[in-house]
Image (cartoon, rainbow, N blue to C red; front, side):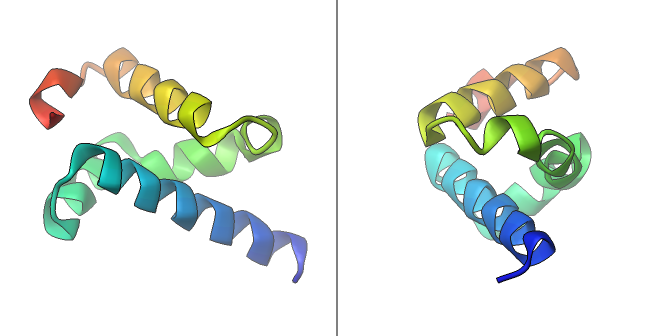
Amino acid sequence: MGTTQTTVSWVFYMLTLLKKQFAISWEEFDKLQNRYKLSAFLLKHYELLHYYDNEYIIDDTLSYIKEQGGDISALY
């Protein structure tokens, strides 16, 4: 598997874990993902984040959403 394919697979995997964390539909998650550009965030920080465990990455992504003005309490 090439580097690009590995990176994209990891981003999709992390997005799937985030969706499960929020327990929302794909439609709702897609709106959230587009609003905060989560794919771009994960791609941009792949080189650093992929070394950490999934819980850390989810927490870091939630922090990013908060920094963008998002209310993550509404997601639970």
